[in-house]
Length: 346
Image 1 (cartoon, rainbow, N blue to C red):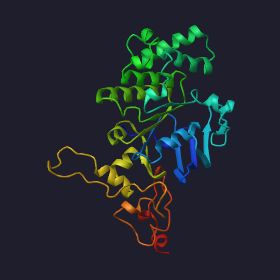
Image 2 (image 1 turned 90 degrees about the vertical axis):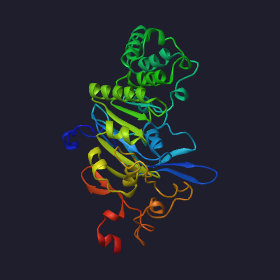
Image 3 (image 1 turned 180 degrees about the horizontal axis):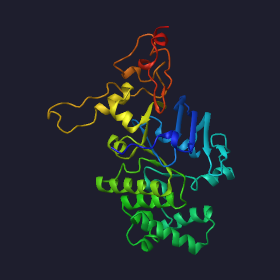
Image 4 (image 1 turned 120 degrees about the vertical axis):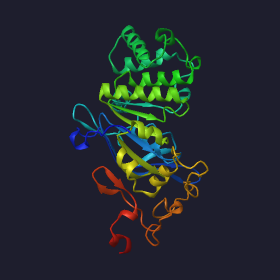
């Protein structure tokens, strides 16, 4: 587990402040509430891990920050405040998708590494050209300067013979090298915030460790904030300073990595941690599993969305009242088990 991080109140203001964010998809069958009221802060020089099962809204929330949610999805409520280096606060949620201000922020101030590089890199465009395009757009470089910087970045991310790989197409690279090329593209403009959407899911363990070390190295070098989306609790324990747990489009618990792993409060968080295999556990002991299934997105339960799978349901409360995040400092939990008794029974 990482060393004790610097208290957040000693840091500068957050890079990004997300408040009551709702991103919905309007389909023929109904409205899918992929993100439903998310509140989050992302701080400089800290790694925030977004944890949760597949389909809980992690990736859509991240894409909402950059305004790259595909139709028929759109932000219907909330704010995404980006605190720029010049002190200006920009609400990305209300910015026009094709506006110059938003294009300037994408790639330059906020960059994203996607889960599957083969679907994100242009298949018929050479790796070098895709990296230099970002440099030419955001860094006011000449073509020779951009090429030199791109080759240097490919070398920094550990790609052998970077000058040769500069001329390669994505299909000529292995999965690990494509992911490194994606990281090079994301980091070439030295962003203030890096969003990494499960960047190591399809990689072997050795390459995964190298990629995570690489991101951590650049984080410290550039003092950038990192939002790492994952469902791998081992990765969270290794790299996170802050953790947010999501379930069905909502954040159900936040805290430092120590708080989440040593004293989880939400039943969902506890169930996730209980499902981790542990050294020294009895050989034939079955791992605990979260009972039931995630509800269909078009049939969200009333009240607490986790109540259909929870072993601690409070009758007449959990099925009627949606819990809100509450707590002290960075430790917040959305659960009626942690609300005052007068709220539960009043």
